[in-house]
Amino acid sequence: MKSTDDLGLFGTLIGADAASGNISTVPDTQATAGDGTASIALGFPPETFIDRAAGGEPPRGQDMNGFLNRISRAIQVLQAGYFGPFNASFASAIGGYPSGAIVSGSVVGTFWVSTADNNTTTPGASGATWQNLFSGYLPLTGGNLTGDTTIKGLASWSTTGNYTSNGLILSGQNGNIVTLRQNETTGKYTQLAIQVNGYNSSNGYFSLRNDGTFWSGTTQFADRTWVTNNFSDTFSSSGNDWFWMKFPSGVLIQGGNATYSASDGTTGTKVTLPTTACRQLSAEYGT
Image (cartoon, rainbow, N blue to C red; front, top):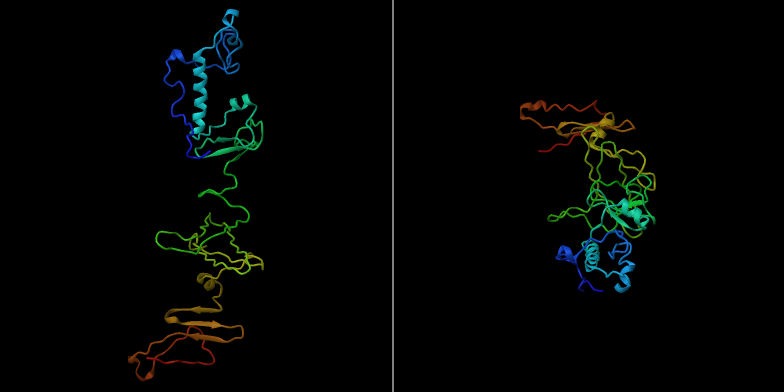
């Protein structure tokens, strides 16, 4: 079979234009036994196979048109690609959906797959033997990842034209923890770039973690604000590039820029160091 073959699509149902007297709605069971009318249960009944002279009844053309109309309607639904919703009455009548059967969910675009034969359970109900058709796949938005996730085949980072960078946008409520780890492959390397946007000015930080295998632990990423707050007794900076650094050995280094003013005359320019003066003072002069 080829896609270019005539697929026999039913654009019009068999008997669609038949006069009402020439087509019947075939019932599930025969209403009056022995009258020759067809039904889903019997098809054409036994009396239609008996000669009229022997008391038989001829088959009715209306019933044949009714059968063909119903069959073409069911085929048309399949040809249209329609997956119907779960039907409890239908499930009971056939003894349950088979394993692998697909039904549509109550929300457009959702589908359920039966995971058991003779399945009469309701999709989505507690303990039901159905699973989401897209189970194991992550939606474009609103999905949650659990456990380790491996992403392969990412091209180089690019912002050319209207293309966006190949990367991951990790977001969540304040307080969430995100771990990125990179597995080593012999002879290959990967460049990892991370952009972190803080939730607000008071907690815009992230932690780099390392236990020898992958990033873990509690080592704090030292941004400028964090360093200033936690090392205020070790070093500091101020205007005109002035700074001071105190080493464990007791050595104190201070530096910065000072501007000579002609109004100072021969007395020179007074320079105030950021903190208590060092034992030795070194100065460089320039124009």
